[in-house]
Length: 326
Ligand code: TXA
Ligand code: MG
Image (tube, rainbow, N blue to C red):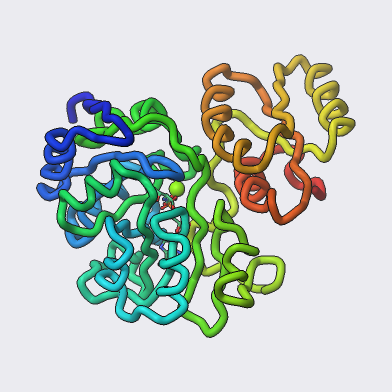
């Protein structure tokens, strides 16, 4: 495929002609990357199995990992699911448009490839003017994983998408940097008690304030049912190691330098939302600078930092210090 065009849009007032052009690519079964409030998504018509298949090819994504379906309007949730329980209605009313994905029984019109053959579908309404205008103009729900190659860092800027997917997709809509910076919270509503499958900017406490008890990895045992919870994910190319506190950062960096390796440290700064917003852009940048190792000062083990810690632990899996207790 030829080089992928990048179309720049005003995030608050996107040019309708560009939106129409991008939407017609989607309707024609092509892939278009677009900004959301979390990370950039790689969109395809969710009702077109052949179009969605292209997502898996472009990303190198295993077919066992289901894709989130995006809708333009809060009321459209029911169009992609088979049921719309009271709990979904309450959560959608409170958090949509926003960074929360709800997993529910799938509507029969959603093809197998979207759900990885499963009977559930993840659905969310993104809080981004470009994303919603695009979905509305396409007139169909849009299947979209993060617009990165499988296992790699999610993109929070159009340039990250271009680096990863140039020549593999039809177009990229550039709406500037994403505000949220990490992927949506994923909540499974198919059991009596909702289950947190992926922490995110909608925190456990925010969910529990609306729905009561929520099962989450530290309260429930057993294998995760979200295939995206595979240990390694969201990882930079540069090995990343986690350190508890500045003394440990120092010890690890000294050891690495003694072995002649170039290292850089990512310190804890700001509040969790600011840290999340910047995290992937910083990791993409550090990757370009080709250090031998990125040493990360681990943020505190408190509920506010849970989503950021989750992403850091995934980014670190498999590297030499990763097996140390955190
Ligand atoms: O913020 C986000 O969620 C971004 C933007 C583009 O919306 N999307 C995103 O998609 O992060 P992806 O494919 O990179 O991650 C989706 C996660 C994966 O962990 C996947 O396994 C899980 O959601 N998921 C999707 N559908 C599911 C389902 N039916 N049941 C369980 N988990 C599901
Ligand atoms: Mg992803």
